[in-house]
Amino acid sequence: MPHPVKIAPSVLAADFLRLGDEIRRIEDAGADSIHWDVMDAHFVPNLSLGIAMLEAVRKATNLYLDVHLMMDNPEKYLKTFADAGADGISIHLEVHPEPAGILADIRALGKDAGLVINPDMPVEKLRGRVGGIRRLLLMSVFPGFGGQKFIPESLARLREARALLDGEGREDAELQVDGGVGAGNAKDIIAAGADCLVAGTGVFRAPDMAEAIRILRG
Ligand code: DX5
Ligand code: ZN
Image (cartoon, rainbow, N blue to C red; front, side, top):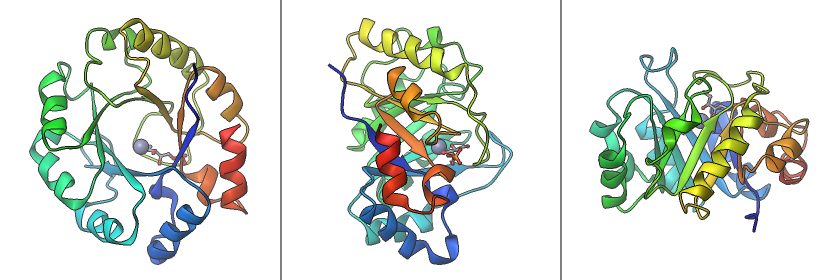
């Protein structure tokens, strides 16, 4: 049975000068969670949202904070992000090709563990590695920047990932997609099996955020 579709606005596309208002706007618009992109200028060629800012946002909202670590050595920062208020922490398979240990460490901190793969990582590499995850995130752009174009092959990869999760007895795991998601492709993405859509530009730059979220839900 398909899960209800969740929408996770990516703060990367927010107006940082008015971050408090932007968080309220996400809440009022009916988002399910907040996607928090952390970039280290090493694993990806950009720097983004840090820890002090996450702490500030934690104080301002009860929404689920879904932290996406686009960084090398994420294992050194798990407790820092957990203490700063993350509800879920996702790490890249590219950084931890055998992720069981770090995923267990995330769970030991009382947080949901997530696993992420880039567009050029074969979905098959996830086989045997999805135990204990709350969510699987498929990047539909190469990470580092918001506002990129959705890579069309991601639809087939979503179908493959959904089948793999189901085959591994992980029907309960959320399948997320991140990058270039918007009104024009949400229906296809949901039909391909995604049940959580991350969207930055698609929600923050929309004239009406609530309407944009309704449209994304399909
Ligand atoms: C990309 C980030 C995404 C990004 C999505 O590196 O992981 O979360 O903010 O932004 P849009 O929706 O603008 O592609
Ligand atoms: Zn992200």
